[in-house]
Length: 298
Image (tube, rainbow, N blue to C red; front, side):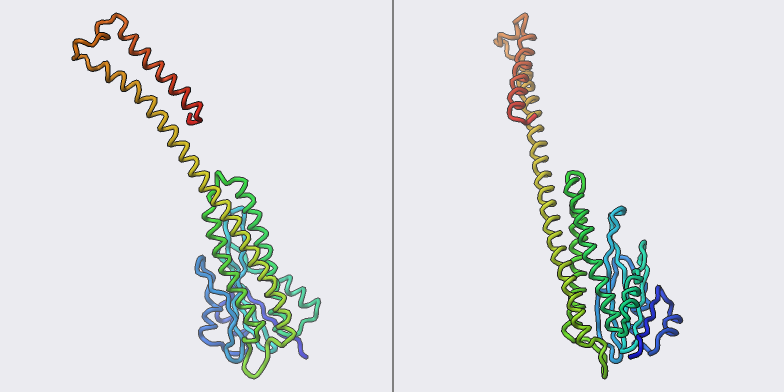
């Protein structure tokens, strides 16, 4: 069997793409191959038959801990019985997917079938997803150490988005395992290739399970953070209540002795009446300070 031709392009223009393609493509497939990767507008992972060829899209999530962000590397595929085209796109603020490991694996194993090349690509994507889960777990550990300083909402949202992408990728691989994707009058994914895709499918399932655990860990951190915020608010309310009470009693005493229109009030004619009122203010304030400190409100 002749060795499969693999054309691997990075951000090609339409002229280069048409020059390297041995067949004409459907306008929809051609448009998706040429469409640049846009932030927050990534395509869904897919694998679908277009008659005499198979068109696919794979996404690899990449964590950048230094910038606290995630971006996606897009790889588009065109497969026939004896030809495979990969189009790697450069994401905003990131690097395109590196296929050197896949090239080395194929050369070392003497891969001849496009379906096997596609499997090695998908397997590498699955490995990257497992690495991604490990990287996210490290960020979660860091978040747990700094839960009082860092909000968990952003990471929780990021994990939710990654979970959806993992589920879509899992569905793509499962469509190959089920034998639902192929070309008319030919076979891109023979039975032995489908078995290999089953191994990659298991890796994606492991990544999904790991991400579910990560989401649970983040949910726990977020619940702890919200409980801590609630407790802090309660402490603030207690302190404000104590301060208001401390100021209330002296205000009452001053207001009481401010009713100097009552001629029969004995304290008005005392020579030490001023000191008397101040004594009550000081004593009641000290008593309240002692009480609130004992209660832990101050």
